[in-house]
View 1: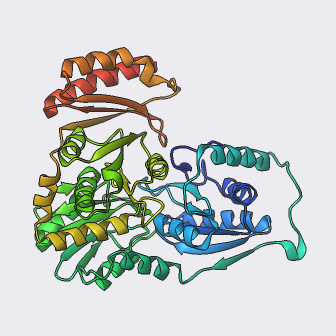
View 2: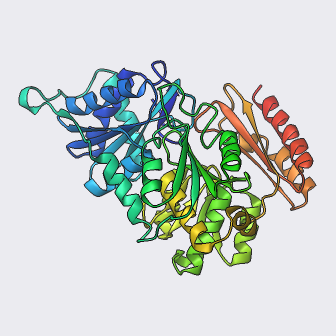
View 3: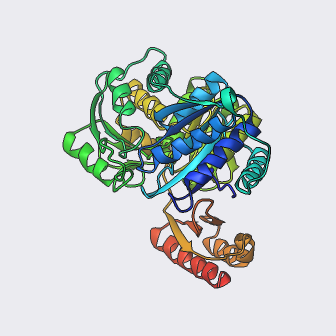
Length: 442
C-alpha cells in the first residue's frame, strides 16, 4: 500500500476496503503514537463502514478511538491540534461518491511528512502480511467512543476567528456539496449574522459532489443571481476547500481568493514578511498581481501538504491553491473551506465593495487550459521525457505564458496545463503537448 498526494484513495470496497482501513488504524497507533485516535468522515455511503473498521483497528492496538461522526476534514485537523492526538479522516474529497479514502494527521494536526508516510506504509504492509507483535487482550483492548460535541467545538473556533466582527447584512448562498459542510456551514454563517440560503445540503450517501460543490458551481452561480445574493460559497465533499461566486454570478477561484486575502492581510500588517505560498498551478496572473502589490510569491508542488510545509519552514501566514485550499497558518493547520469563506465574507463586508469588483481588482487571470491525459504505465518522469516539447512550446509563447506537465497524485492521469494570452492559443498548445504525452506513454 502506498500513499498518494493526500493519503490513500480509490474505489470503496475494492481499493479502499475495511481490511485496509483496519490495518491503517492499527499502523496509525503504532507509528504515530499516543493512546487516542480521532476518526471523522464525510457523508459517503461507505463512510460508516470504513470509519468503523479504522476505529476497530485502533482499538485492537489498545487505543481509544474517538468517533467524531460527519465532520469537515479541517475540523478533524483542528481537534487533533487542540487535543494533542493523531487523527484520521475517511473521505475522497471531491471524488464521486463511489470512491473513498483515508488521510491521517499527526498529533499536532499536521499532514504527514514523507518520512512518517514511509513508516506507515511499511507498518501497513507488515500488518496486512499477518506479521508483527501480538495484540492486546482482555482489559487492555481499546474502546470506540462517540464525541457528540465535536461539531460545536469546531463551529465555535470558526466564529472566534472573526474577532468580534459579524456578517450582518450579507445575503449568502452556501453550496454544501451534500457533504461534510451540510450542517455546520449554514449554522455558522447564520450565527455570524448572514442571511443564508443553503443548497445541496441534504446528503443521502450517494449525492455528495454530484453536480454541485466546488467542482460543479454552476447551480450556485445561477442561484446567486436569482436570489440577488451578495455572494455564494461552494465547498467540496470534505469542506477543506471553497470557491466563491460574486453577486454577478462570476466564479471566484482560489487564486483570486488568496490574492484578495493576501492584499488585505498585508494592508493590516498581518501578512508575515509580505509573503504568500502557492503551487505551480496558480495562474500567472496571480504572480503578476502579487508583484505589483510588493508581495513575494513562494511556489511549491501541487497539494496543500506542500503549501503547509513551506509555510512551516518560512513561518509565513498565508498560502493556498487555485482549487480553493487556503491555509491561514496562524489559525489552522490545513486548508479550511468554512474558515476561508467566513474571512472572505468578512472582507466583503468591511470593504463595502461588491465581491466581483474586489476579485477583478485583485488580479486578472490569463486563459488557462487543463487537459487530463488518461494513461496506464506512464513513466514517473514523464515531465522530463517531454521536456523538449515543453521547451519548444514555451519558446513559442515567448514569455507570455507557460506549460506544466505533471502526473496526478490521485488518479491515473497526466495533467497538462497551459497558460497563454488567448484561450485559442492555450488550447492549441495544450493539444500538442497532450499528444506528446500520449505518445511517450505508448
